[in-house]
Image 1 (cartoon, helix red, strand yellow):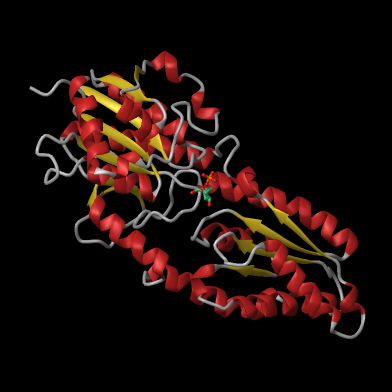
Image 2 (cartoon, protein in one colour):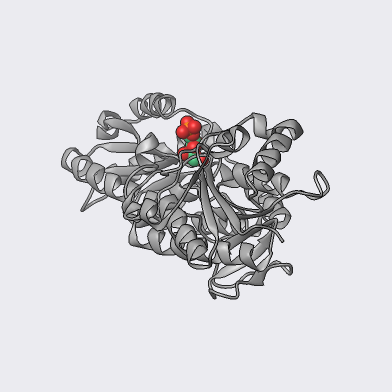
Length: 365
Ligand code: F6P
């Protein structure tokens, strides 16, 4: 009989709420009579056999903390068959038959390889939980950390809007998200931005510059009310924020009237967006995903992700037996949809792009 031993690891960019998932998974595992171990430093620690026991006392209070108490890495050796073979040997030596991987799309691709029975018939059971502030994991409607990141961006932009209004300035605020424009798009709505720039609409660099100029001119020419402009730029737009500013400045100077005097400032939020205490929603969602993930492993599921969604379309998704918002999705299905999200072929991305085209005129008013 397989010993009831479960390992939890966090991998890739940390996301607020990872600790809530670790805590829930530990408590549920221990309550079910399982021995729970934490893997230090993601797949790097797995390859090096860095396991430590996790007891309820070890996870007390961590639900409040950002980052991950287990540490995280982006581990190149794990992408090789040799690296994965070493990792599986470490798990077998420690008599661990079930692994919960908490991370973004790269980490979950790693989870799929770790559990690949074609690569190793003795591979452990592996379940993934989506955790990435970028919200670029396919199929799940949200990943752990996204809500906190959105709230952090909102708070920063609200502060910037105060000072921008006081001086009638234009601000370009760059937010993280790698190739995904989700954080930029969602927060532009939440902060009442004048414009959002994201990669998925396929616009050229020149078109992005023109749109920024148009948004600033429209703001300056408002007959009443605010004349500041708040522009959110997704990190994935292939034009560094300072270069964008320089090109916008040059265009503004060529326009007659007070528009030419508009001061354009840049704030790159960077890693500020990734840290901080998780919001109530992230704590709750991560806890429920952690619970459903461990239950899935206990029932014998493998090579699947637990997605968060009200209702799912993929035919091969099944609803969790313990939580109506949680769905088991084969990792291959999730990875295929992740690829479509990044290439723009996904209906989800096409829908988002269309919405922003439709509301473009309204945002400038
Ligand atoms: O994937 C999360 C993320 O924060 C991205 O938004 C960003 O592009 C990247 O990680 C930064 O990675 P690192 O912290 O390794 O520089």
